[in-house]
Amino acid sequence: MDDAVDTTLLLAALRRGDESAREQLYQRLYEPLRRIARAQLARGAGHGLDTTELVHEAYLKLCGAQGLSVTDRVHFLSLSARAMRQILVDHFRGHQARKRGGPLPPLSLDEARIPVEARGELLLALDEALTRLAGLSERAGRVVELKFFGGMNEAEIAQALEVSVRTVSSEWRRARAWLARELTAA
Image 1 (cartoon, rainbow, N blue to C red):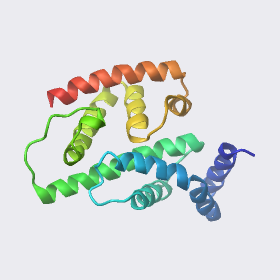
Image 2: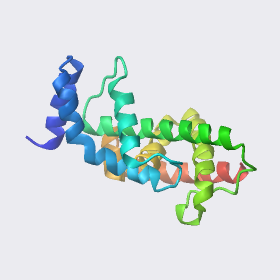
Image 3: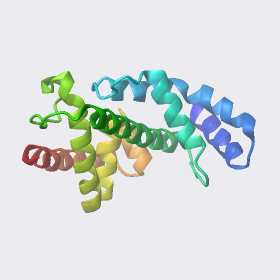
Image 4: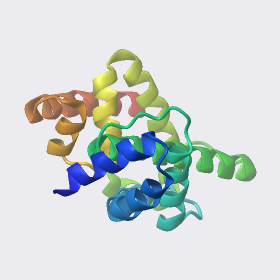
């Protein structure tokens, strides 16, 4: 059996209450979760969190959720990216509340042009803009979330959203343009 099928079977076992499936699932998905966490933390918004802590927090958040109905590997990784986004935003908000810093610097989606010390502010501004975008187009919001926060490529996003790669590419272009306008106005 391939990895996706094995993961789907473990998720089904976990939904049935098989606690041994939780550990097997964790072992099977640990490296993909670390890849997503590294992509998140590479943006410099962790403020003290390391890859292992972010993976553990996200996994516990997901597997501890009541009524969580995950269908397959891509769906689980997609939800993991969202959980990591929420954890990082919450963590940074807590950091900011303690710091009580100055005004936000100019924002961009181009990580190479964002100073490391400003990346936390970008995370907050992007989170707020992404919430507004999802209100206008849920699919566009999910594409940005999976690409930017989840580190997924367009083929993985297409699979997660059950659309074509061309649709994902088109949504990404439109969403980036919309977010650039929103973040510039911020």
